Image 1 (cartoon, rainbow, N blue to C red):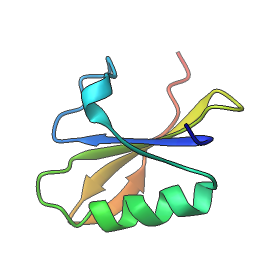
Image 2 (cartoon, rainbow, N blue to C red; image 1 turned 90 degrees about the vertical axis):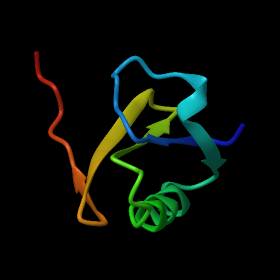
Image 3 (tube, one colour; image 1 turned 135 degrees about the vertical axis):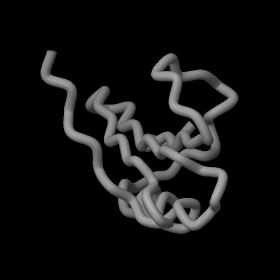
Length: 75
């Protein structure tokens, strides 16, 4: 498994799950390119890119075929 894992789906249940896993990538740029491509799919509502090395995730909402980064939950 490569450093950046890519998840996406039609419904974000915030529980995660292997069924939402799509691919893994060596670089964050490769993962972001894939996210931009998949955002054009009308059945995709959200995308998450997880960095296994830093244990952090970037979460995007898909709106009109474009990625909109979600604010970090500070609670």
